[in-house]
Length: 585
Image (cartoon, rainbow, N blue to C red; front, side, top):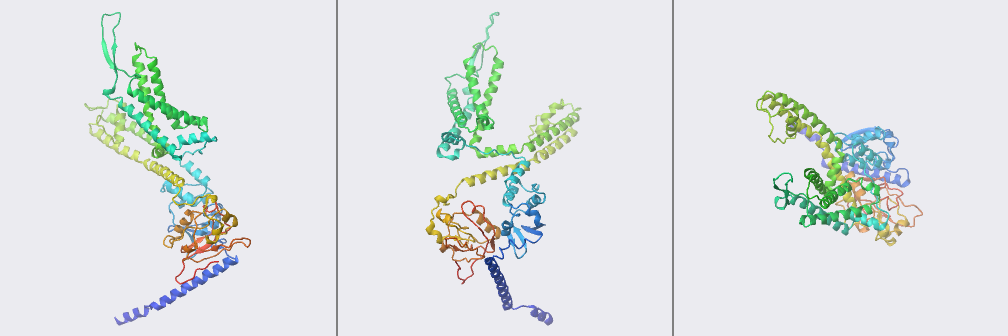
């Protein structure tokens, strides 16, 4: 027992020794960083961007899953995130000698295949469409690759929205086509929705027995002494009916709206190729046909049956007015786009259902052929039973009575559930894609509260404030200051800027490129890997770093390229230790 305790005590390391080792390790790391800073200032090294230029293999870690590929494989697409050395070095981990991405692991199989195949995109089957689309945007594969991917997935190519060139024509077009463009357009959209709902309500209410119109028909013939009077429903309205007056008001609004939209359309020939415009035309045609039938009404009504049947079918077309609501409903538009993108899956569903209907209706007919109380007199009679059973509706009007018939009915129900469930995930994935795309579009169109205008002419900063702006390894020219452009990475708060490399990069890429950071907000930072301004620059601006631990910048964010001049960004930043002075230029 004493031997074991003595051995254990000999293996114990004093706490002071561990603390000494930690201090030495931190000192060595600090010396290494200072050497790198000196090399960067002398121009010998630009950071991790040049350290892997001679290697042939690239190690990529995606949320713990490691991938290896040739450097020349990714370099064939220099505009992408992985193909551009300065872009990918933002995610370089020096300790593990790899690139780390906190992204979806399953999606990276398709991303890596894009580089290996020379530009072909294939989505992994276990990755939703909207998730893979976000990965394509993150790795910056380009709009052309994204367009080809959407085409291969079955999405219909969107035509660019064209506005009329004439100013007055453009205003009318925006009023009726884009309800969110102005307050007046929104007011017109509300009126249009109200008129559509009123028209649909009138269409339904006028069929109630209390509001139906009847007429007396004299069927007396001159050749016979018989005199017969019958009362039947009159489908032709009269001008004095309240429903007809309200219907006339609705049609006047629909007609004016259609004419205004057509007159202001930028492309007249393409106007009626849009399905919504076709619905607008179809929804008002029954009214004019009904009015024409009233005008040319024959009192004798010799072709009574044929005329009433045609008139009822025409009036039935009025129900298509409900689709006019989709013009003012984003949800209905997303549903329509989903169905259009899922035509192939829906076609396969109908095809499989047709095969199963024929198969099971034939089987149940022969299984029930010898039963005395069989309801299946023919195979076509079994079509209805097969459809109702496969869709799990089960009206019960037709049912098998024999043992073999019940067995076939059970198999029919199971086959129907499996057949209908197969394309559902694809349709749901398409719906999620269009839903997220619409949400992103709305976020881009809505300006965040407190955001400084993008235009440099509207910026509230002037050249007098140039000494108060903080850059991070960038060069601010005199032109930028005269235009009022403020260059920064983000508003600095120590509690909100700490995090991993990915989180830090996300904050950098989403920050406003005209936000200003004052000196008093930078009390806890120090510069690392400073890139000095050109000698001919007339500005004496301060260069400080962001307080994000281990964050490395080796490229210009796309958001900064729009209104700012950047010659080079390559700054590694770390939080300021307690008791250390802040260094500025």
